[in-house]
Structure formats: C-alpha cells, structure tokens
Length: 131
Image 1 (tube, helix red, strand yellow):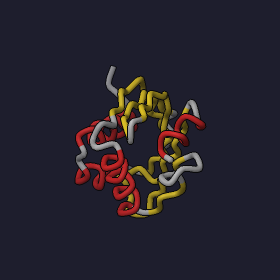
Image 2 (tube, rainbow, N blue to C red):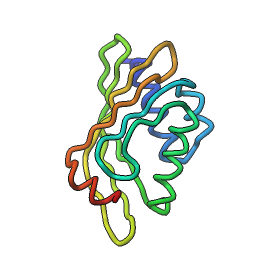
Image 3 (cartoon, rainbow, N blue to C red):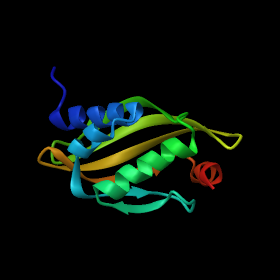
Image 4 (cartoon, rainbow, N blue to C red):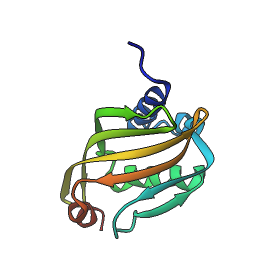
C-alpha cells in the first residue's frame, strides 16, 4: 500500500530536519506558515513565516551543538489536510540530557505545510532543558 502524500511530505520534512537541510524545509513550508512551540522556555512561542521557523530550527541545532536527534515513531493522517508526526527527541545541552516523546500536528494545504503545532510528553522536562 502506498504512503499517503501527506505522510510522505511529513516524513520528508523530518528527514530534512535531521540532516539540517534547510533548503528542503524551505520547499515544504509555506512562506506564511507558523510553528507553535509549547512551554515557557526561550525557544517556545509562535514562529511566523519561513525565515522565523528556519531560524528557530537553526537555533535548536546551535543550542544542542548538533546533538538533537529525532527518531520517527509514526505518522498518522486524516486525508483532510492534517498529519501527526510522532517522534522520540534526544539532545544534550549545557550538561543536561533530554529524552522525551512528542509530536507535531501539521496542517497541509496543497503540497505545503501551513501550520505546525508541537506537543511534548513532559512539559516541565522540556522547559528545564531549554531554559
């Protein structure tokens, strides 16, 4: 059975993020997209537009000195423009280690991601890691 196109798009995005391939991510994300990051830490909040989103991704890499890894656990789609990418996130930063499960709920219009709503399993653990 062929993978749904929205699942393929999300998988391609996760793979590009893992490689640090910002050019591919720019192709997948709408110019006016928003990525919502939960929590109260310095990298939480709403990142509006491709440039702001890609800059936030760059900062994640810098803050973790490239140690951030995403292990894809699965992708679910509804066939109506929504997809959920579930993953395990590990990273090291300033002597701390993060190992958590999370997901991103994607809104897809045409062949572009227009909204990314991130969720984490342990909000306090994430806030402590990124603060």
